[in-house]
Length: 218
Ligand SMILES: [Cu+2]
Image (cartoon, rainbow, N blue to C red; front, side, top):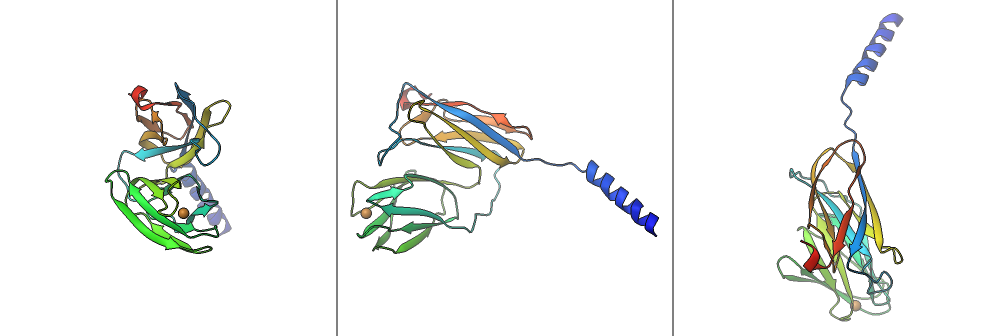
C-alpha cells in the first residue's frame, strides 16, 4: 500500500513536470523626450506618462472591486493623472474646507457628466463604464483639472518623467504571453509612431519609446 502511494506521488510529480507552465511576461523600457522638455513639479506638472498594453484579442476582464481614490486637496486634484480599469469604483474625496464639484469631459465624444457638488470630508463614488480619456474638472474652481485614463484590461502603468534627465522608465508585470499594442499617453506630448505592436513571451521584453510634440509624432 505504501509502495503504491509512492508510485502515485511519483506519477503526479512527472505530470507536474510535463504540464506546460505558462509564465506571465514582463514588459519594461525607457521613455525619452524628443524636442521637448516638461515641468515635473506642482499643479501644472507634466511628468506622468501612461503606458498601456492593449491585448489584440479582445477579452473580458473582471474589474477589481477595490476602490481607488482621487482627492481634492488645496484646490488640486490628487493624483493629477490616474489610470483605472473600467468598472473599478473611484472615490472622489474632498479634503478641503471648501465645497468642490466634479464633472467629467469625455475626450472621445465631447460629452460631459456632472456627478455633483459636495462639502468637506464627503466622498462620492463613480464607476466608469467606457474606455478613453476623461478630463476631470471642478465647476467651482476653474483652475482645477485632472486626467483619468480608463482601460478595459489591467495592463497599464504610470511612468514619471525625471526632472533632470527628462526620461522615465516603466515596467508592467504579469502580462500573459500574446500579442499586444503598446501605447503611451501624455497630456501634451504624443508617442512617436503613436503605437507599436509587440509580442509578449515568458522572457522579459524591453520596449523603449519616444514621446514628442504632436507635429513630430508621426
Ligand atoms: Cu473645487
